[in-house]
Image (tube, rainbow, N blue to C red; front, side):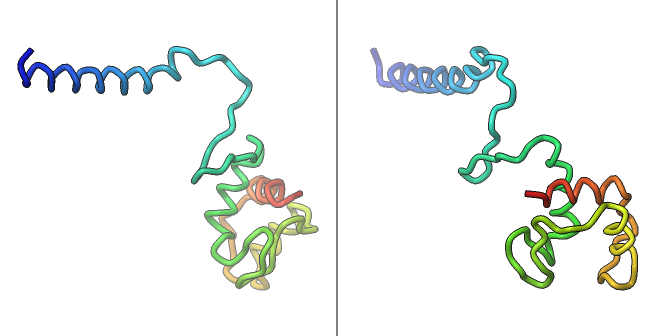
Length: 116
């Protein structure tokens, strides 16, 4: 066997192995309830109902607030507001910046995310 054929055969084996690895999850997957999602090497344990709240929190609140740490604003884990009161507060001049674009439903999603 010539050197070109050996190199071609080794590349072919590597290619087939990579394709099998990529498609094995599709071919041999079982229908499980929900597999954990991984972010930066950690398991994402947040429930599906809190994902929308996390997305809204990260887009609107995370620049000034964290869940468990005071930075510019206070920590927000377990905040004691109902969605209507918090919506009114976020839309008023008492809170800077104001967030009049958030609906009551969106504020409720954020509150679900910040609960323990």
